[in-house]
Image 1 (cartoon, rainbow, N blue to C red):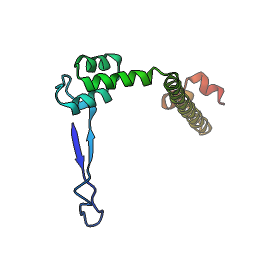
Image 2 (cartoon, rainbow, N blue to C red):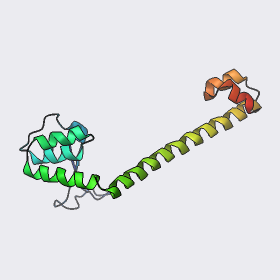
Image 3 (spheres, rainbow, N blue to C red):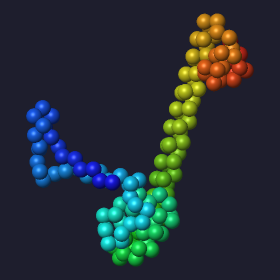
Image 4 (cartoon, rainbow, N blue to C red):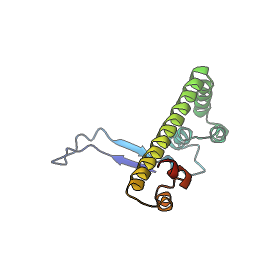
Length: 140
């Protein structure tokens, strides 16, 4: 669950300092049942919470510090400003996916045009590009 890294000089592989390290926690490797006395696990579980049920599970641990953290989380996520930012993020992700899909489709059409110009049969072009035969015919 935890990987620890130190910074080394590239050529001589000397440790920069023993006073600094990078710790990476793999949230997916957290145990399903966490020890409420292990505050690192509890915080990591909150950070990795994806659903309201995950957040409720943290609350059910009845750890005062986490009750306060969950309350602050709900206050922030309940604000109109936060909700608008989330809406804008969702829209940006959707727009990006649409743009990538359109670019892929256009690239497939261009490939189909080139294959048509080389005299390849429509059914073979369809098999390669996954475009419909009708769509390929319309490119002629």
